[in-house]
Every structure is written in structure tokens, then in C-alpha cells.
Length: 463
Image 1 (cartoon, one colour):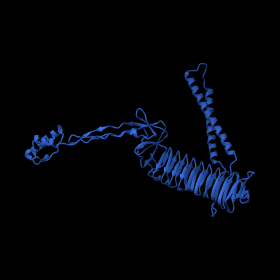
Image 2: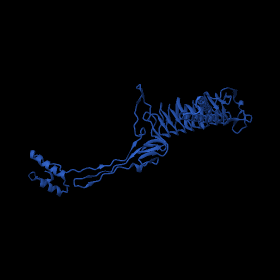
Image 3: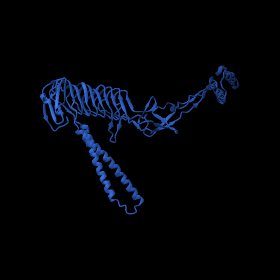
Image 4: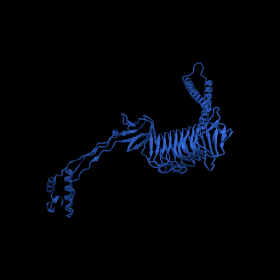
């Protein structure tokens, strides 16, 4: 029997008395449970136990949460495999990162709930835990508006860190860029603890820092690139760097680097356009085709095996490319401006034009002014580029150890070829007559034609 009663002693009064003595809180639920038990015993005397009181567990409060704005939920998992309309699977596609602007709302913050207290069988209160207030934990990159709107303090990408939303300009990839991440396309800086596997792309509006090996992949950034291990491109790996690049080595890579390139070990079989200098006094440049606009500092140029190595010095291929782009854009604006001016001349306003005709005429005039201003800015930039392209370029080459045979330097309109090895340290520069000269160690400057074959050529780039 419950509460230690003998079967013949089980009456409602006896059970209630003992329940009170044990401290059980008596309420309607307890009385009904006793009544149901005794009625059940009338039909089955083998029943000797029953539960007459239960505790009521607390209902803990719910944490505050954000109702994300459309398309900005950073917790959404990307599909492992994305298929196009023809059911072709893209195993390389990465997740899409939600870029936001300063002041943009990322969603609405809902407050936490307090929860509902419970009770034990003795009637004592079991306190419910209130939900956590997310507003108190909002990251400094976010601001809470008066109506619960959560806004970005600055431009960046919306991610979740430690369970909380953050606007960040830095994406940290803990391992390698591979099928687990897909391609990376991020508005900010990207740091990769591992490498970049073949077939994958990493794009960033800021810097890219890769700790491991970069395989046959494509990396594009507006800022600097750091490749601490290096890149083995196998002729298909591509780099597009808007700032400076630093690497342990580059092998069979293709691409452009707007700033300076610093390589520790070797630049092997690459095709690169470097808008600044190659500052790699401990490295070997062997094979491939390189165009460098400013200085060239290396330990070894070429190879003992005579691997053909081409280097264009003092050229400005990036400036030439920008000039082509700006000239094309200017021609398109000239055509658009001419068309609008013809429309303006043909517009019949008459003596008393209607409000609608006046509105059309004002809109057309505003478009003409806007395009004319853009065209003027483009023409000014083209003139500036022409001056920069035509300006004399610095010839500053320093090879610390040796220049091997079968190395070709393209200096302005001159092709310089080395038929035999030249031990360094050797410097190549302009003489007082703006002719290419060389200097061994601290010796006097001499015509470069003394140690190399110098011929004129129409080609101005290594490619």
C-alpha cells in the first residue's frame, strides 16, 4: 500500500492524513488521485501502489532571438551538392556570404521570455530560469534600434561567432578550402589555416592569407596575398592580386600582381605580370615569362640547364590595360552623349510646352550633363595614363649570384640575351646616355653589350 498502510486501512481519510504528515501539498489533483486509486482497488485488490502527487517541472524561458531579414540568415547550411536545370551537380560551389552595408538592418530582435515556475510534491516553488537577453550580448559591430531592429555599424559580412551575430571583415577557414567549404567569395579578408585544393577558387575584396599549399586553383584579391607555403600551379593555377604578394615559392603559376612580389625560394616556370617590383634576393627565377614594371632583385636568374627564361623590364602592361579599358568606355560614352544631344535637338517644345514635355526636357538635360562629366573624367584619366606610360622607366636589376645562359631580358625596345654565365653580384641600369649598362660588384658601369647580345625588337613585353 502507498504510504505504509495495510490494505484494510486504505480509506480516503487515512491516506490524506498520512499525506499531510509527510508534507505533501493537498489539492484537487491529490484528492482525485486517491479517489481513482480506491475505485480501482474495488475491481482489483492486487493494486497496492499508486502515485497521488507529482511535481510540476518549471518551463524555462526562451532566449532572445533574431528574426533574420530576407536572405541574411547566416545559419543556413549550404547544400552539399547543387544541381543546375540540367541536373549537373556542382561539387565546388561554396556557401553565399551575406554582405551588408553600414546602417542596414539584419533582422528584428525578439525579447526573451521569463518562463513559468514549477512546484514539487511538497508545494515548494521550483524557479524557472528566464531566457537570456540577446540585446546585452550584441557584438559591437551591431546596434539595436528603438523598435528592435538590429543594424550593422559598418560594412562587412554577417556571420555567427560563438552563437552570436557579428559583422566581420575577416573570414577564418580553420582547415583547407576543399569540398567541405566550396569556393570562397568574401567581402573582406580571408585567412586559411590549411591550403587550397585543386579546382577551388578564393576571392576576397581584402587580403588573402594561406598557411598551406595552394594547388591548381584560382586566388583573386583586391588587397595583399600571403602564401606561406607556396603555389604549385601546374600551368593552370591563377593569381590576381590587387596589392603585394609574398610566397615561399611559385611554380607554374599564371596571373597579375599589381604591387610588389616577394618570393623566398623560387619563381619557376611562371607567367606573371608584376606592376611593382620583384624583391626576392634569396630566390631563383627560372623559366617562364615575367613582366616587371620596376626593380628586379634576385639571387639567381635562369638555370644551369639553360632553361629559356624571359623577363620584360620597365614595361607597364597594367597601365596599358587600364588605358584600353578607359578608352573603350570613353568611346561608349561619346556615342551615348551624341545620341542624347540629337534627341534634345529633335524635341519639339514649341512656344508653350506642356508640363510633361518640360519634365522630359529637364530629365534629358540632366542625363547629358551627367554623361558629359563622366566623359571628361575618363578623358583626363587617359591623358594621365599616357603620361605615365611615356615617362622614362627605372632600370634597376640586381642579381646576387649568377645569370645563366639562355636568359632574355626585354628592356624597352632592346632584346638582351646572355650567351654565357655571368657571375654576380651584377647590377643592370641605365648609363648617362640612357643605354643599358652593367656593373660587377662595385666595379665601374660598362655597356651591357660587352657581356650580352643586344638587338632591337618591336616587342615590349615578355608575353
